[in-house]
Image (spheres, rainbow, N blue to C red):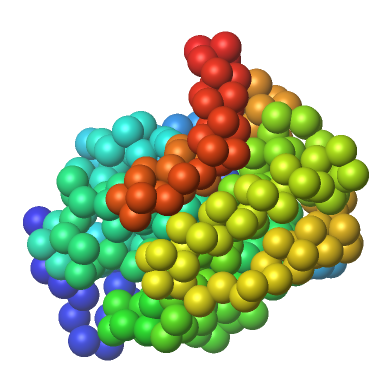
Length: 303
């Protein structure tokens, strides 16, 4: 088992899941002068990132066998939230006594998802605000610079330092991470559920036929977030629907794309988690629960 990185040396880093997010993160770290081991299911010859008018190739090593890796200083977990069981062999091989794990996924229960593999004080939960897509295995198109919000902790600040010296992704430690992550979950819960079931881009949330449903769903999720301690504005439903009526309305959420393309969806991290937390507080979430059941049924039909 390797020793921690020596003072002045580059930390060892691995990215598990190199889709749109993992590829963009690995490219940003490459721009910052780091080598990243890319842990993937589908091999590709090299990572390429298109950002604006610029295309860059990266010589990061690509590995498809968890048996070929050993513990590293940092793991970036960039799979979908429901794909952690498939990522488990990688996590067991890459995580050692000093490894820190940046969980770059949707939802609010990042720490709980990886509790089997790493203590909570070595987990950095991340809020991803990064417009990107995967055109082909290893080819990422990033439409603009991204932002990743993390807690204002030693580990969060250390993650930010890893990304210093490049412009593709900015890591922002925040002292009110709880409010930020619940605000993002409101967007993910309403956009993911309504747009996946209706197979529409985000503007579908603001359609007259579902505006009342969307408003009620947003208010349910916000009530649970406030019970957890998040500070969310009273007019969040109005603001959210207006937001989806703007330029972002043309965007397809990744969950809706997954349903459209016949892949399993991450409804558990976006919607089912709201119901689980709500029950701890004695809060009723009938709209969220109904949509969760419909999404689960849709996934069952996919197998």
